[in-house]
Image 1 (tube, rainbow, N blue to C red):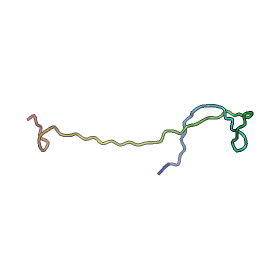
Image 2: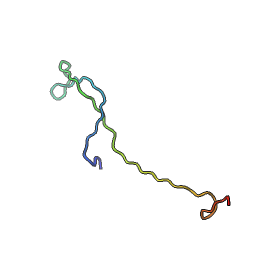
Image 3: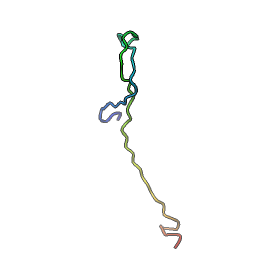
Image 4: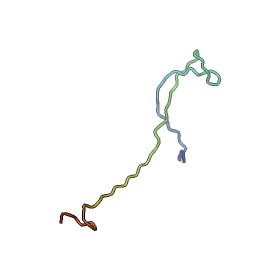
Length: 66
C-alpha cells in the first residue's frame, strides 16, 4: 500500500530560475524561466501506543508495605 488515497503532496522549497527550458529540457540560458522548486511533503502517519503498569512487590498484586 504505497498511497492509499492516490494523492500527491508537496511543500514549497524555493523560487528560482530554471535554465533547462530547451527542447527535451535541455540547457538554454537565454530563455530562463522562474519556477517553483518543490520538495516532497510529509507523509500522513498514525501512531498507536500501549502503556502498562507493574504492581509493586508481593505476590498476586499484594502491596509489600502492608
